[in-house]
Amino acid sequence: MLALDTATPAVTVALHDADGDRTLAAGHQVDARRHGELLLPSVDRVLSEAGRKLTDVTDLVVGVGPGPYTGLRVGLATAEAFAAALGLPVHGVCTLDGIAYAAGLDEPFLVATDARRREVYWARYADARTRVGEPAVDRPAELAEAHPEVTGLPAAGAGALLYRDVFHGAREDLPADQSAAALARLAAERLARGEELLPPRPLYLRRPDAKVPANYKVVTPR
Image (tube, rainbow, N blue to C red; front, side, top):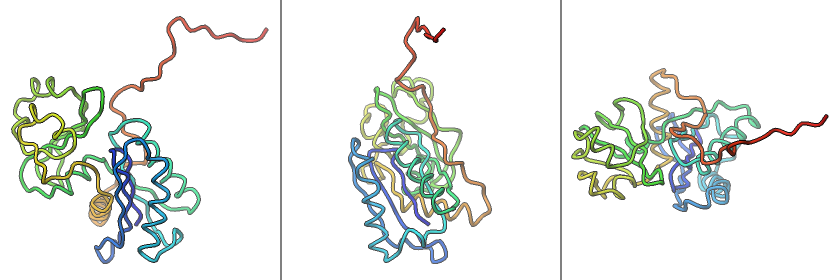
Protein backbone atom coordinates (compact mmCIF):
# COMPACT_ATOMS: atom_id res chain seq x y z
CA MET A 1 0.00 0.00 0.00
CA LEU A 2 1.53 3.30 -1.16
CA ALA A 3 0.34 6.33 0.81
CA LEU A 4 1.01 10.00 0.11
CA ASP A 5 -0.26 13.38 1.28
CA THR A 6 0.54 16.95 0.25
CA ALA A 7 -2.29 18.79 2.03
CA THR A 8 0.07 20.25 4.67
CA PRO A 9 3.54 21.75 4.20
CA ALA A 10 4.89 18.19 4.48
CA VAL A 11 5.50 16.11 1.37
CA THR A 12 5.06 12.70 2.93
CA VAL A 13 5.17 9.22 1.35
CA ALA A 14 5.12 5.74 2.86
CA LEU A 15 4.99 2.13 1.68
CA HIS A 16 2.97 0.00 4.08
CA ASP A 17 2.59 -3.77 4.35
CA ALA A 18 -1.00 -4.13 5.49
CA ASP A 19 -0.71 -7.89 5.99
CA GLY A 20 2.31 -7.53 8.24
CA ASP A 21 1.12 -4.24 9.77
CA ARG A 22 4.46 -2.55 9.23
CA THR A 23 5.88 0.42 7.36
CA LEU A 24 8.46 -0.76 4.84
CA ALA A 25 9.83 2.71 4.11
CA ALA A 26 8.80 6.34 4.53
CA GLY A 27 9.90 9.80 3.43
CA HIS A 28 9.02 13.18 4.92
CA GLN A 29 10.09 16.64 3.76
CA VAL A 30 8.59 19.95 4.86
CA ASP A 31 8.48 22.61 2.14
CA ALA A 32 5.16 24.33 1.48
CA ARG A 33 6.28 25.68 -1.90
CA ARG A 34 7.79 22.60 -3.55
CA HIS A 35 5.21 19.82 -3.38
CA GLY A 36 5.33 19.31 -7.15
CA GLU A 37 9.12 19.07 -7.21
CA LEU A 38 9.53 16.80 -4.20
CA LEU A 39 6.71 14.27 -4.43
CA LEU A 40 7.80 11.97 -7.27
CA PRO A 41 11.46 11.82 -6.15
CA SER A 42 10.15 10.95 -2.68
CA VAL A 43 8.06 8.10 -4.12
CA ASP A 44 11.15 6.80 -5.97
CA ARG A 45 13.27 6.92 -2.80
CA VAL A 46 10.68 5.16 -0.67
CA LEU A 47 10.21 2.36 -3.20
CA SER A 48 13.97 1.97 -3.60
CA GLU A 49 14.53 1.85 0.16
CA ALA A 50 11.86 -0.82 0.51
CA GLY A 51 13.27 -2.82 -2.40
CA ARG A 52 9.99 -2.63 -4.28
CA LYS A 53 8.77 -1.37 -7.64
CA LEU A 54 5.68 0.69 -8.39
CA THR A 55 4.19 -2.39 -10.04
CA ASP A 56 4.36 -4.17 -6.66
CA VAL A 57 1.87 -1.71 -5.16
CA THR A 58 -1.64 -3.11 -4.70
CA ASP A 59 -3.47 -0.10 -3.23
CA LEU A 60 -3.02 3.67 -3.11
CA VAL A 61 -3.95 5.92 -0.20
CA VAL A 62 -4.05 9.71 -0.49
CA GLY A 63 -4.85 12.53 1.89
CA VAL A 64 -7.82 14.50 0.56
CA GLY A 65 -7.36 17.54 2.79
CA PRO A 66 -8.60 19.97 3.79
CA GLY A 67 -5.57 21.89 2.65
CA PRO A 68 -4.41 24.81 0.49
CA TYR A 69 -5.47 24.36 -3.13
CA THR A 70 -2.15 23.98 -4.96
CA GLY A 71 -0.39 21.60 -2.59
CA LEU A 72 -3.44 19.45 -2.09
CA ARG A 73 -3.93 18.97 -5.83
CA VAL A 74 -0.38 17.67 -6.31
CA GLY A 75 -0.92 14.61 -4.15
CA LEU A 76 -4.37 13.85 -5.48
CA ALA A 77 -3.38 14.20 -9.13
CA THR A 78 -0.34 11.98 -8.60
CA ALA A 79 -2.36 9.26 -6.86
CA GLU A 80 -4.99 9.27 -9.59
CA ALA A 81 -2.33 9.14 -12.31
CA PHE A 82 -0.74 6.08 -10.66
CA ALA A 83 -4.18 4.48 -10.27
CA ALA A 84 -5.07 5.04 -13.92
CA ALA A 85 -1.72 3.77 -15.19
CA LEU A 86 -1.61 0.67 -12.99
CA GLY A 87 -5.31 -0.10 -12.62
CA LEU A 88 -5.17 0.20 -8.83
CA PRO A 89 -7.81 1.25 -6.30
CA VAL A 90 -7.14 4.62 -4.69
CA HIS A 91 -8.55 5.38 -1.24
CA GLY A 92 -9.04 8.87 0.17
CA VAL A 93 -8.58 9.71 3.85
CA CYS A 94 -9.17 13.05 5.56
CA THR A 95 -5.77 14.63 6.27
CA LEU A 96 -6.86 15.74 9.75
CA ASP A 97 -7.78 12.11 10.55
CA GLY A 98 -4.24 11.04 9.69
CA ILE A 99 -2.74 13.63 12.03
CA ALA A 100 -5.17 12.62 14.76
CA TYR A 101 -4.24 8.95 14.34
CA ALA A 102 -0.55 9.80 14.60
CA ALA A 103 -1.24 11.76 17.80
CA GLY A 104 -2.35 8.50 19.41
CA LEU A 105 -4.45 10.09 22.16
CA ASP A 106 -7.26 8.22 23.91
CA GLU A 107 -8.96 11.38 25.20
CA PRO A 108 -10.82 14.27 23.52
CA PHE A 109 -8.54 16.58 21.56
CA LEU A 110 -8.33 18.91 18.57
CA VAL A 111 -6.39 18.93 15.30
CA ALA A 112 -5.79 22.29 13.62
CA THR A 113 -3.66 22.92 10.53
CA ASP A 114 -2.65 26.23 8.98
CA ALA A 115 -5.19 27.25 6.33
CA ARG A 116 -3.37 30.54 5.64
CA ARG A 117 -5.35 33.81 5.46
CA ARG A 118 -5.16 33.76 9.29
CA GLU A 119 -7.46 30.74 9.37
CA VAL A 120 -7.17 27.11 10.44
CA TYR A 121 -8.64 23.86 9.20
CA TRP A 122 -9.78 21.98 12.28
CA ALA A 123 -11.75 19.07 13.66
CA ARG A 124 -12.47 17.67 17.10
CA TYR A 125 -11.77 14.04 18.07
CA ALA A 126 -13.04 11.77 20.83
CA ASP A 127 -9.82 9.76 20.48
CA ALA A 128 -7.16 9.08 17.85
CA ARG A 129 -9.54 7.06 15.66
CA THR A 130 -12.84 8.87 16.18
CA ARG A 131 -13.67 12.28 14.70
CA VAL A 132 -16.57 14.25 16.18
CA GLY A 133 -18.36 16.14 13.40
CA GLU A 134 -17.05 17.40 10.09
CA PRO A 135 -13.84 19.35 9.40
CA ALA A 136 -14.23 23.13 9.28
CA VAL A 137 -12.28 26.28 8.46
CA ASP A 138 -12.40 29.31 10.75
CA ARG A 139 -10.43 32.23 12.07
CA PRO A 140 -9.07 31.14 15.46
CA ALA A 141 -10.74 33.98 17.36
CA GLU A 142 -14.12 33.20 15.78
CA LEU A 143 -13.66 29.50 16.50
CA ALA A 144 -12.98 30.31 20.16
CA GLU A 145 -16.09 32.47 20.33
CA ALA A 146 -18.34 29.88 18.69
CA HIS A 147 -16.80 26.82 20.39
CA PRO A 148 -15.13 27.96 23.62
CA GLU A 149 -15.16 24.39 24.92
CA VAL A 150 -12.49 23.25 22.42
CA THR A 151 -9.82 25.87 23.08
CA GLY A 152 -8.55 24.17 26.23
CA LEU A 153 -8.38 20.68 24.72
CA PRO A 154 -5.03 19.09 23.85
CA ALA A 155 -4.29 20.19 20.29
CA ALA A 156 -2.13 18.78 17.50
CA GLY A 157 -1.18 20.39 14.20
CA ALA A 158 0.75 23.40 12.97
CA GLY A 159 -2.36 25.59 13.19
CA ALA A 160 -2.66 24.97 16.91
CA LEU A 161 1.01 25.81 17.44
CA LEU A 162 0.70 28.96 15.33
CA TYR A 163 -2.22 30.29 17.37
CA ARG A 164 -1.28 29.29 20.90
CA ASP A 165 -3.12 32.34 22.25
CA VAL A 166 -6.35 30.58 21.22
CA PHE A 167 -5.40 26.90 21.40
CA HIS A 168 -4.18 26.78 24.98
CA GLY A 169 -3.73 23.02 24.83
CA ALA A 170 -1.36 23.08 21.83
CA ARG A 171 1.39 20.52 22.35
CA GLU A 172 4.75 20.37 20.63
CA ASP A 173 5.04 16.65 21.33
CA LEU A 174 2.05 15.99 19.04
CA PRO A 175 2.34 15.91 15.22
CA ALA A 176 2.45 19.28 13.44
CA ASP A 177 2.03 17.93 9.90
CA GLN A 178 0.83 14.81 8.16
CA SER A 179 2.59 11.44 8.26
CA ALA A 180 1.95 9.11 5.32
CA ALA A 181 2.92 6.15 7.50
CA ALA A 182 0.13 7.00 9.94
CA LEU A 183 -2.27 7.66 7.06
CA ALA A 184 -1.53 4.20 5.61
CA ARG A 185 -1.99 2.44 8.95
CA LEU A 186 -5.31 4.20 9.50
CA ALA A 187 -6.51 3.31 5.99
CA ALA A 188 -5.45 -0.31 6.47
CA GLU A 189 -7.37 -0.53 9.75
CA ARG A 190 -10.51 0.93 8.19
CA LEU A 191 -10.33 -1.33 5.15
CA ALA A 192 -9.83 -4.38 7.37
CA ARG A 193 -13.05 -3.45 9.19
CA GLY A 194 -14.85 -3.29 5.86
CA GLU A 195 -15.31 0.48 5.96
CA GLU A 196 -15.73 2.43 2.75
CA LEU A 197 -13.08 5.14 2.45
CA LEU A 198 -13.44 8.51 0.75
CA PRO A 199 -13.14 9.01 -3.02
CA PRO A 200 -9.87 10.68 -4.10
CA ARG A 201 -11.43 14.13 -4.41
CA PRO A 202 -10.17 17.32 -2.74
CA LEU A 203 -11.95 18.36 0.42
CA TYR A 204 -12.32 22.11 -0.11
CA LEU A 205 -13.86 24.13 2.68
CA ARG A 206 -13.76 27.54 1.01
CA ARG A 207 -13.90 29.04 -2.46
CA PRO A 208 -10.68 29.43 -4.51
CA ASP A 209 -8.94 32.80 -4.81
CA ALA A 210 -9.42 32.90 -8.58
CA LYS A 211 -12.77 34.36 -9.57
CA VAL A 212 -14.42 35.55 -12.77
CA PRO A 213 -14.03 39.36 -12.90
CA ALA A 214 -17.10 41.47 -12.24
CA ASN A 215 -18.93 42.69 -15.33
CA TYR A 216 -17.18 40.01 -17.38
CA LYS A 217 -18.46 39.94 -20.96
CA VAL A 218 -18.34 36.91 -23.22
CA VAL A 219 -17.28 37.74 -26.76
CA THR A 220 -18.55 35.27 -29.35
CA PRO A 221 -17.84 35.33 -33.08
CA ARG A 222 -20.63 36.30 -35.44
